[in-house]
Image (tube, rainbow, N blue to C red; front, side, top):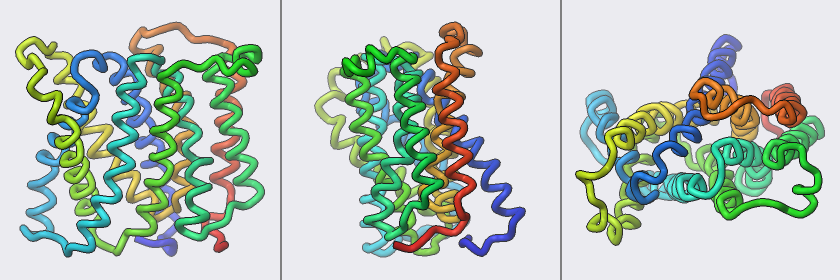
Length: 304
């Protein structure tokens, strides 16, 4: 699929991007509920390995039982690294900060992505899109600091916020790298191998922790949470992310993350994790405006 896709196809992709961001947003409250159940690297290992195993029959039945070329495998291995770093940072960060804070910080990914897009994909950012990225970042700051300017000026942020910000710096490279490394292969093939390499890196990272886990004492809810994350916020969301990036471009897809804190607030209310805080409204309004500004930018990426 390419930039010449029919209009109805693009409209469908935009709807799928809304589904994607809702799934991604759900990973923050779910992750907060289970983050103490296992070490972050072990939890992510199970998540990625399970997603790969569930997806393998479909991928190989449809595309045949063969390995991609060595160059393609290297590309998938590179693509998996930002994901591994991001998700490890996310689950470690949720031990020290809230789901809402991580959801809000995640809205900085479009601005970070736009920076990387210029150098990796040679795509420039128009004035409207730049304004949207700025507003989105300001909205994220408002949500993180609950509109408290004193906390903002004093940089009243915790260890979890800083750690997740590091993860977002890595995640910002993911969309541009998809655009750079995609070679026209079936999207499910790319999704499978990226997740599989992610599981491999996490296995190497988890080796010191695996023998220390008392598996029989791990709560059933932790395993159910990992299953949900594996299917919906790993397998489905990665597929949608890669599909959207090829059709819409890296920055436009990343802009959907502006909606993440809005979905996190809604999910927290639904899960009974906390009441609605009215002081968040200005920040939510800013990220909504930012998302619209970026999406109204020319649908075709500009060349630098």
